[in-house]
Image (cartoon, rainbow, N blue to C red):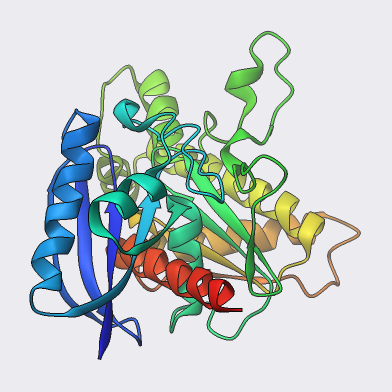
Length: 303
């Protein structure tokens, strides 16, 4: 059987796994992200070399933060500044002798859902990954839509308010539509310095008015951003990823806010709008999606 190695490169750690042709992970682990470019690339090559001793590895898939060009060039790489401006595909191919494909991390996590996940068999869908910011992906006719500059799916830059004094504070990322936004607004109103959103949820469950009010705004702002994208692209489904998507309270309340906005919108009230569903793969999504992408890239190379 042939295998693939998938890497999910993050600012604090690099996760990796050995996957078979069906996307099943047989081995996985992680290591701390080095601060030096060559140390990052060499350590990844060492991981691949260890796998190739016992398995027939066909190719390597990379999930990388930031703006990732289709040829593997990293215009940016999120918090990993040492990788800015390099062609990571070429660098890893040179070190391993294997075919490599690099994909933006939100795109990889999103396309993973086609491989037995929440978007299996669906040709057109939208995926949002919610964390410190909001990333995402448009999948059109079973393929990732990248846009003219590989920046498609940056939903966090969307404007939700008209604040002429500070346009940045009007974005979806800065409003209470992200975990950071939720904490920022709660701390502004409470005068506290809470760093874990679970505290707000716990206080809301105990009946604290401020926590309940801030969460209501959080859901409405997020639902507003989702609805804007839905009316623009008409997807079959909206997949929500990120750690918070595993919280059943979050999903239920987001769906309620989404439905309420539809009911308030005269043009949409009687329309069939796509459901919001949770992603399946969560922490393994980047590894799985990276391998899915390299399999697709390989099939195109053969043609």
